Image (tube, helix red, strand yellow):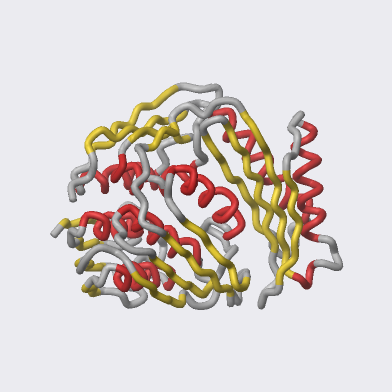
Length: 345
């Protein structure tokens, strides 16, 4: 059994550990789960992630209760089948999906996972960004994946529902090292139906477009929409495509925050990202680690964040040698992650 210590990491460490255990069919014991957080241990979305992966690979697990700081996970076979989990209130649906997505690399049959909770909430990828940025990248890499959103869920009530569908995948090694020239920019703005009279989604999009055009960018797609939800909320996502890279920057609406500010924030974040020369944004960086471990290749990221650093250390415990090289850029630097020796399975 692989013994891991999450004392210096957050929930991403546990998610990567679960994915790698399922992919390699090796049991793991993770202690001090979310040990660097003010309230350590499992939150509802982490418990739901454990339950989801366990159901899909017939695993034996202990320590899945909320607040648990030790999780033991023993896979029972290759991932396949269907599962349904409830995060509760506005706990993040996409963080549960993040744990399951890499399982496509070891699946011998389609996977289907339905999750209820929050779709567009803080400290996690909004579902809009997930569907418009991460999934297109994975499909480009050869992973058959789709997400169907039945209902959106904003903070604090949640009440959202979405279904992830995965097919078995054997992608080529990642080749996301040199970003290349910019190609297209897209703006996606969404708000709850109750905010339609105030034109919140429209104003977010207009602010984003105005900011982009002021920098000389041409907008290739603009999508504005309203959805039914139990809590009011909004999100604006800016997607940038390059010859060999992709980035998704986003902002969530909140009480007292002007719609125009929500629209401008992701554009400003995009400008900062582009100065680094990285091929993917910092949020995609740590999410791609299990794929890098299993198929190899290289990817450039804006910086070695704590999430990436702890993830690289974790992959080493599974026999995966990740080379990290810092490279100077106009924005201070980027990092190149390369895997020549794949994880043992």
